[in-house]
Image (cartoon, rainbow, N blue to C red; front, top):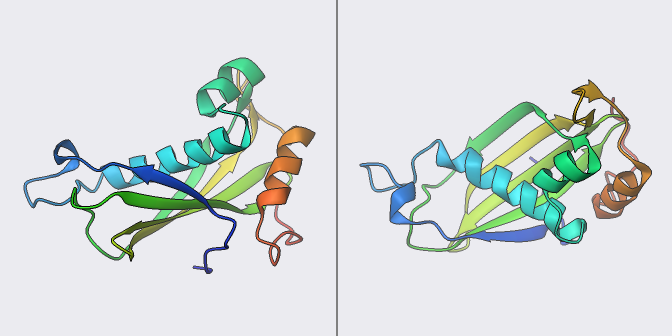
Length: 151
């Protein structure tokens, strides 16, 4: 995966005992949850506090996932805050790719790449993102990737 840009948004997660399995590390199913929470935090940081809930209900804009991929490097535990660094990698005509790098104690624990499509939420019909969203995402794209075409 590509290197993290300096402009990545940081979303902190307090990992707790309840997130762990009998092996005393975070239960694997929680890791995608943490990544999705971080992406929602990215939207909140860029939409004046509005996340997926407000996008769906107030703006009628959905972003359902069509692909999730994760690379695991180190176990996640409650010993340290989980620092999730989030940024959009690419913006297509109707889709967006987000990347999340999650670190604890300065070590990369996992990387996630997600692909979502923009939809008219109450119809679940594919659409182009509103211009306001396109501008927000384009400003946040890593400069070397901003002009990369994608479907």
